[in-house]
Image (cartoon, rainbow over all chains, first blue to last red; front, side, top):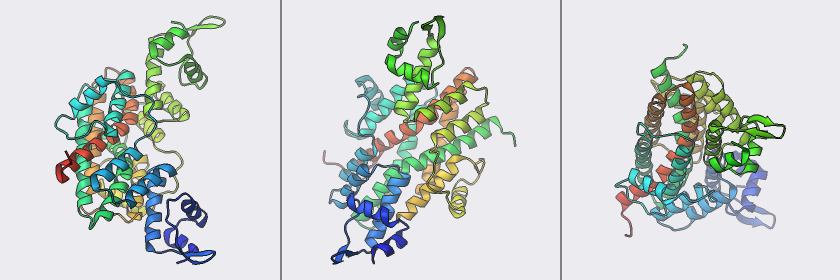
Length: 205
Length: 205
């Protein structure tokens, strides 16, 4: 199909498609004439993926490019997870968490199997430092409830990935799921907070 | 204490404190001389809160101001949750989700008590639209696993809030927990993904 048809099929404006081509997010079409290229269903699929991770996932174009490079590589499942995770996690952190906070995270996640370089480990330490630094305390097991919720979500991520037919489909689900899973949880937690608040404290209705 | 001492006590540079004062995030100190003001422990506490929601929570200054206004108001628990949620959720959404997606979210959250205006409802519909729009499918209950994880997290949020001594402390925990809870879950999910991947697929170690 031509550029205009690709735009119709994907719902992405032509100017945006050209931008993604220039930025290397979308592979070039097959050149049919000096000034024209042909695109196929793979381009439609890739455009939908880009929209999902950029628009809803909130990734920058540079981050999206790194994720897509991992997707197009022949990295294994665990390695692609590493790239997707490193990309989705903020690159420039304000400060490295201190060893005491990291030890607190390791104690919380006792029995979990992960490398000390997992970006989530440092990120969790920073969140806990900010939580406690702002005067908050974990009196009723807030951290461990979140660890249990995160573990259940990761099990669901891997369950879903396991149903995909081949490595490419698995990696695509992993990338989209890593980016959109955070947004899905945040959205559903807002609804759940209203539900639990109304259950416990009643509502005006 | 003077400005310099407030800076030392809070770990926030003087220039940043002045910026927060100008932006209305931090209440003015008590004026002691034409060109000098006195600050107290409340200012230290507030500065730590601002740092938590701006630096780790990633809120803009304008969003942080709205959250802090809700904190300083005499709104009830449920209403303050609404403000905190509306602020933490992105303000300008690309497009309203269609009714079919909203109905899908309502079916997923069957039995939950929430208003149709809850920002998480529309946000969840958008995430699901992006997930399915990028060619993904929910074959193994990915959505409902996330709903269960979000409900468990919200229960933990309210458990923690319930231990706080008074309304001000409760609202502060709600605000900090709403902002930092998303970041904590995202961080711990990254670690959990590595743990579950290594359990299911083994690792090179």
